[in-house]
Amino acid sequence: MGKFTMKKIAVIGGGIMGRGIAYAATVAGFQVHLHDLYPEALEKAKTYLETELRKSVHHGFIRPGEDEASLNRITFTTNMEEAAVEADLVIEAVLEKMEIKVDVFKKLDKICPSQTILATNTSTMSPTEIGAQTSRPERCIAMHFFNPVHKMKLIEIVRGLDTSDETFRIAKKAAEAMNKEVVEVNEFPGFVTSRMNCLIGNEAMNMLMEGVASAEDIDKAMKLGLNHPMGPLELADLVGLDTRLRNMEYLYQTLGEKYRPCPLLIKYVKAGRLGRKSGAGFYKYD
Ligand code: NAD
Image 1 (tube, protein in one colour):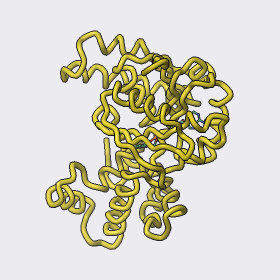
Image 2 (cartoon, helix red, strand yellow):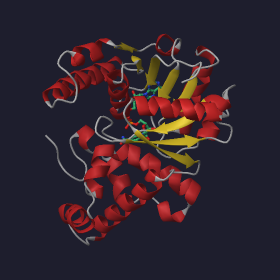
Image 3 (cartoon, rainbow, N blue to C red):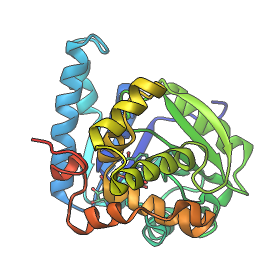
């Protein structure tokens, strides 16, 4: 990593993605500081991490004792300054809303030393727009992880307009240290994966709404006919329908009509049916 030795990673937002990124970072041996605004979110993240680390020992992914050691490398805090002040790399995983991400980046820019790299885990949005609000756009980048982070091999690394080559190299090294494969993407809304996946998911929702087939049969058709490992509706439930709707709204604004969010998705979110995380989405969960 040249002069820059990465030891500490701060993760901002302890939801579905933040807790997963914390898992990948601690198993790779980094010191991790996980921050969320809400103590309940941190409690949930801790329980999740304990369970997943234990399962990883059971499946032989990590050695006995590494679960406890990994957990001990993570601190949980509702104080963003405490989390980020000594970090070499900060990975932001808060809600998919530009104004919230910009607010977090502005605060991080004030808190963190000038060499700290600020990465966003946005699924769709512009790292250029986010980075431009800081005094260090050359050290801002998108590192797009996938859900569930401990199982998914990819990180899409997206350079903003002013992202430096060094920042890209460091982000790639960090990704590889976390045992991930990288694709390098030039910034455009939705990158490669979300642009494709949101369109497929939305079409599946439109088909369900039009009565073309049941949710089960749409998913089965995509899995057994087209060799997708998960159906698009079960995948949307895993992502979270509120998050998916925000992704669709952004892609609709930036890429146009093709990405108009399905009315059924909007209706489900209004009803509080957010997928797995709320117990019901296109399917029901215990
Ligand atoms: P989530 O709703 O599960 O978690 C978001 C967390 O951020 C919550 O715990 C919330 O309390 C916290 N938060 C909100 N505002 C905050 C702030 N100002 N400071 C600190 N914490 C704050 O959402 P998620 O699914 O983890 O998504 C997070 C990001 O990751 C989004 O940008 C999303 O698009 C992206 N993403 C999601 C997925 C997915 O499958 N869910 C996959 C890849 C990327």
